[in-house]
Amino acid sequence: MTQVVLTEIHGKVGLIRINRPEAMNALNNEVVDAIGAAVDAFEADENIGCMVITGNEKAFAAGADIGFMKDFDYMHAYKTDFITRNWERIKTTRKPVIAAVAGFALGGGCEMAMMCDMIFAADTAKFGQPEIRLGTMPGAGGTQRLPRAVGKAKAMDMCLTARMMDAAEAEKAGLVARIIPADQLLEETMKAAATIAGYSLPVIMMIKETVNRAYESSLNEGLLFERRVFHSAFALEDQKEGMAAFVEKRKPVFKNR
Image 1 (cartoon, rainbow, N blue to C red):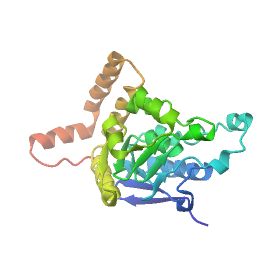
Image 2 (image 1 turned 90 degrees about the vertical axis):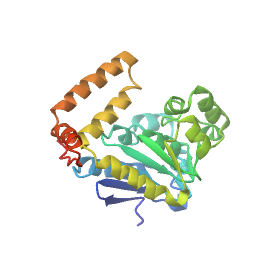
Image 3 (image 1 turned 180 degrees about the horizontal axis):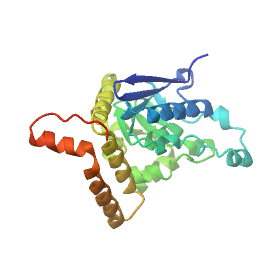
Image 4 (image 1 turned 90 degrees about the horizontal axis):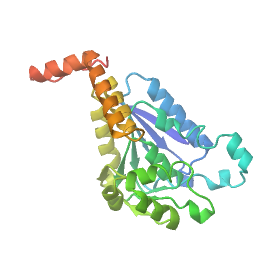
């Protein structure tokens, strides 16, 4: 039986690859549960400092699997806590997650990419929320994360017309952190992930938590949270090592404590 999700470890980086090429990496419970299990494993591995989620050259994920959910009724969706039960595991991991997107990231695929901390896009990437064509609406963050990333006007446009946004527009709009030539996407994303993972893990997690706080609080409350977390960083051995190394003009050796 084909594994729908493949995992690899490259140094301090955990790679998660969606592997349903025959279905354009469409997302169903089997796939999402497997992604969650991979995230759990990498979260628990003290050697891992960053994760990358990717698909293949044709699709990151072309959407949720329509055949899987077409016969759902309200009570089934509600009682099984559809989406919340397993998709949100990506959002709750404390370690950074980069989505490496080539080809299509549509519907649930776009929403899954947005659950990650940043998106690196191949120049072939296409993003969209075409659920309206199916007589339904985005349900995994498309109406909530997308406006926060690209603004109300573009989010309304994408959700109501079902048009796709290419990589250049996505970067200009703020959805995408970097555009990379398609044949270099994974290599460059893994390099960036390795750079992140090479720093102090407690500081990496502090920064992720603090940036995310900006979306959940007022500016003054966010600044207060940042200041307190910044103050707490002075309790870290890695802070002592990092600043000493700078003064001594040498490379720091972080111990993740």
